[in-house]
Image (tube, rainbow, N blue to C red; front, side):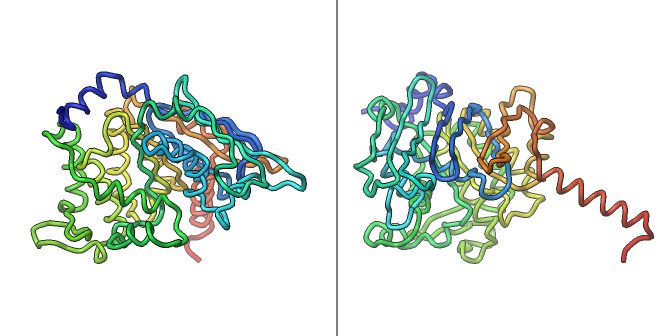
Length: 357
């Protein structure tokens, strides 16, 4: 029987780089009255004010990716990652005074997966799901890294989640499933070894697992994750996902606010790694409010890197819209840059007016 490394080689011959997500359409779903967003096969950066749906869009895409491997009903997976009150599917339909129907549709080249349901829907099996058979014909490896770090809470969490009704979105259980995976058979590719070495330098060690508990292993021995800074834990998680082969060609990475609890000096290293993953055939989605991330991406990109910015905002009617931009300088509106420009202008004005007050 062929081993995992051989299957990985076969997958590459099929052209995993062409398996990236290409578009999402949605109507009357959570924050979106009507929205279409087309993606880059490389890095996709979501920016915009709070409550404009950046995280929601990533969760839709992640749910679709995950169902291609697990076979879970798309509407059910949406319910698990959004966790509406009472797990009532219809609560994800945009609120109107009259009955309405919401739907989402995720595209991957010529394939599409769609879920449609009314605001009266209670169970996922009442939704209309189309395209599931064709969608599941090609498995999409995917990872969603939430804002909340989970490795320090890992021991016992998965069994508790499986046995009890606890109020956690399924993304938290899913990320632990990915983190606990053993490494692929065979030697790691040079690109993967290079990325791991860069992360090892940043976190000053390697990550090991003992009895479901994560440790940072370095010259001083094993340091439990509960004693590490949260930013270091997130970099450690990224090391694990690269080391065990979850993030390799054809995979899709979603990361919500990667800047959270991470020193700005480390963001350049992180952006380098995300760009390298993109060059290795990983499609990347990040949602951020951070100026440093935007500028580090802009300054570190190479001519062949595929980066697309998606600016979310509300128009005069209060509806969420998305304006694409091929480069940092073309993001419009860019509330992050405007805020930092305002801070700079105020600092200059204070200096000219006679210094600190």
